Image 1: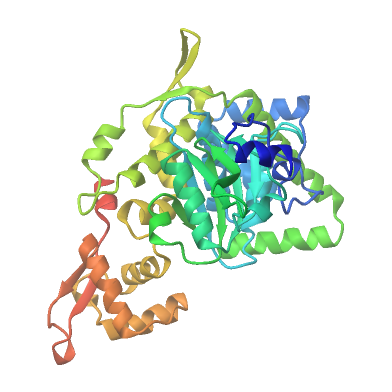
Image 2 (image 1 turned 45 degrees about the horizontal axis):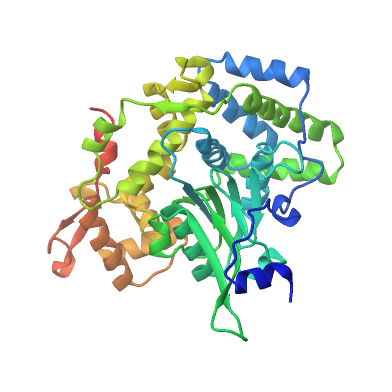
Length: 429
C-alpha cells in the first residue's frame, strides 16, 4: 500500500502540493501558433494599445488578428481570464461554451488561455478532462489550490460529474472526490480542489438547469465573415504560409506583453451596480446573473486601467471603473449578454425569441404557435412540436418578453409577438 493512501486511511492530512505535469498541459495547442514569450518590440506594441482611447477595443482587434474566428467568443474567454485579477469582488466565474463539435471552442480557448501562462511550469492555467474522475487525473494526489486560477474543462460528456465539480467550486470553493475502500469502512480522498477559479467548460450537450444557474452559457455562433476568415487561415496553414503564421503570432505576443505590463492585479471600485441592480429583472431572483455581468465589467476596467484613475493605499492597488467599461462590455458581447440578463439562456428558447423579434414583433405581425413552429425551423433549423413551442412561449410570456393576444387568430387560436427585454428597454433611458 502506498504511503499516500495509507496516510489517508489513517486519517492523516497530506501536504498541499502543486498540480501534476499533465494538468499544466493545455490540450489542442497548435505548436505553430503557440506564443511562449515576448520581446521589446512586443512591449512597444503593447504600449500603443495602452495609449488607445479604449484599450479593450484595441485588444479585441489584436485577438481577432491572432486567433481569428468568433470575435465574441474570443472576448468572452479573454475577459473571463482577466476577471481573477480583480483583488476585490471575485467569487469564481464559470463560462460554458455550448456548440457542436468542430466549432473551434477548444483551439480558441486554449490559445487565449496560454497567453496568461508564464512558462511551461506556471500553474495559472490548469486543464482537466470533461469526465471528472480519478482516471482523468492519471494518478492519486491530494490538495490543489485553484483559487483565482484558470481551469479549462474539456468537452463535457459526463454531465453529473462536471456539474458537481463546477457548482461546488463556484458555490463552496471546494471539490472533493472520494472512493470507498474495499478493506475498511473509510473513504479515500483521491483528490481535492479548493478555491474559486475561473472555469472554461466546453460542451456539446444541453447544460443542466442546476449548472446553468451558476455559469454564463455562451452559445457559439459565427458570422459569414468569421467563417471566411478561418477558412482562409486554415488554407494558409495547409499551404505552409509561414509569413502569415508569424504575423498572427506577433499579435499574440503583443497581447501577452500587454497582460504582463499593463493588466495589473488591483481592487476594482465601481459606483454603477447599485443603480443597475435597481433596474434589473424582478420577475425572478437572478442575482448570480448580475454578479456575472459585474465580473466582466470589472475585467474590462482592469484591461482599460492605463486609461483609468489608479492609486496605491497601504500597499494595495486600486482602479476606478468608468461607465465606458460597462457600456463597452455590453456593446462587445450584447447578443450573448441579452440572453443572460433577460433569462433567455436555453438555446432553443433564445432562438425562438430571436425569430419572433424579426417576424412577430407587434400586434400586426403576431403569429400562432403553429406558424412559429414553421418559422423556427426555417430560420434556425430547429424542429420541435407545436406543444413544445407552446411551452417555450409560456416561458417567454412569464419573462415578460412575449405578449399574447388571446383567441385572436384563426379558429380562436392565441397569437404571440415579441417585445424588447426589460433590460434593453432601459438602455435608452
